[in-house]
Image 1: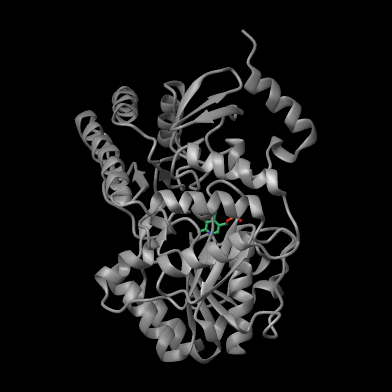
Image 2: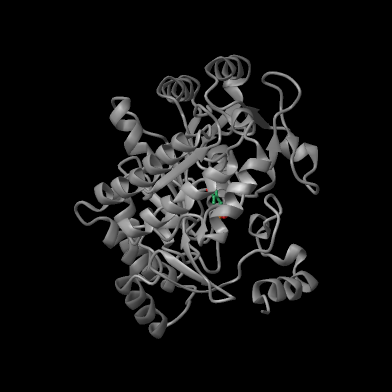
Amino acid sequence: MTDRNADLFERAKALIPGGVNSPVRAFRAVGGTPRFVQRAQGAHFWDANGKRHIDYIGSWGPMILGHGHPAVLDAVQKAATDGFSFGAPTEREVELAEAIVDLVPSIEMVRLVSSGTEAGMSTIRLARGATGRKKIIKFEGCYHGHADALLVKAGSGLATFGNPTSAGVPPEVVQHTLVLEYNNVAQLDAAFAEHGADIACLIIEPIAGNMNFVRASVPFMTRCRELCTQHGALLAFDEVMTGFRVALGGAQSVYAKLIPGFEPDMTVMGKVIGGGMPLAAFGGKRAVMEQLAPLGPVYQAGTLSGNPVATACGLATLAEIRKPGFFDALSARTRSLVDGLQAEARKAGVPFSADSEGGMFGFFLLPELPQHYQAVMKTDGAVFNKLFHGLLDRGVYIAPALYEAGFVSAAHSAQDIEETLAAAAQVFGALR
Ligand SMILES: *Cc1c(COP(=O)(O)O)cnc(C)c1O
């Protein structure tokens, strides 16, 4: 039988670097041939060989309703009929801004862009412009898009500035980016003690989804807030992954329940907000947001920003997830997956830990949930790869790398979860 995935990958590799338009799709961490997606519906997609997969990636988060939700499809088709892009303002941009401000209390004003990368990059520029400071803090294992200043790993010592993680980024460009260990309060204290007056912002994934799934501890998050307030730095939540995904109000609403009065100053959003279309946003307090052009001196722009088809998709998606009970049902379904995996792993004697919030989950082939990147990376990659391919062979598609989170959609049925657990039981059994 011809393997159309393999044929397409060969054609792709001749023309597109690595055969893909975003690196993790290439399966380099796990080996094997990427699946080329032909079509998708609900919780499933079909690859180029016509094989069905239960999809736990959902375009890396956006597809919270599953694929091809009828109300979203209808909104997108209508919007497309009215025009693809105008380069002039539209009513739906106002409606989407109203919805965001309504759902996320810390946001008073918002600007729409087309990718999480743009939103993160613009947030950093705005924070620097608004504070008149240069330095930023980020955490190892958190991803904020591929802007130059954020492609950085920790330097040699505590509270030293970082080194580029990509060729093409001169060290000078990351010289103001301080990289700290996630959930490490002592390092955070030391960094602010030394550089506090120069720090424009601290950017963080509140529940990190780019080192699998790691929650910021409550004492750590409390300290982030205290130190930013005390030193006049902006606390920027990168909720590109967690926004409208872990809860209707994002991860900040989860922390607001644990830390009385908690709010970030700035929020970066993407993924679910566009429902699968290129749409992202950043927002925060009015006084900061008014520093943006054309009101203020911080430049930021985009030909396709607030695109009318993308805003229609985002609005229709938000309208569905706002319905009463949506997140309760999604959380319960996700929890049933995570608990089921845990039970199957225990039966098979495989070291395992797992966590979830709303429709986002992570699991580790480690006996305890890791608290930072270095701990995540202690996972045995060879065992993870066996698990990945075992599931893939059985039609269960999880992220092809051990440092990525997973996503459940509202379209995942109890039967999808059951099939997944049956496949996992077989694969765990073979791992021993
Ligand atoms: C995906 C992601 C980004 C980048 O968004 P793109 O739309 O891929 O540019 C930024 N931050 C976080 C937390 C993400 O998960």
